[in-house]
Image (cartoon, rainbow, N blue to C red; front, side, top):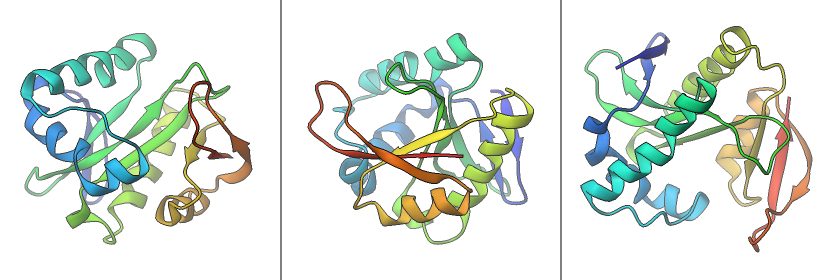
Length: 168
């Protein structure tokens, strides 16, 4: 299990297949469903497929990806944060989601800020963007706190939702 970066309170590391139970919990949490969307990951097998075709495939193709966020002191798994590379966006984008019991404690900013540092210093990514729904006020505040600015609204092909595009 490869550690990407450590902060004062957190460790960001690559996902492994040992994380399937956590993936099921996170992808079915209220915030994930509301702001990211239903992924139909309900079983261990579905979680393995999600990890293999999502984070692990991105690691293989780009070297970066979505990483597990865990508390450093006791290895409690609290969420994910990292860098995605979507065909539909011009630049890599930052993504994050924490379990509800870990929100409003500064962990989202701490993990996202560390991710931005890794993007610049390890992967030489000068431009990072982000997408979010207009009603996701906590994410918008976090993106602005990270120094990203609203650019425009966008819509992905075959998707009816309008997204707000941010970029540094």
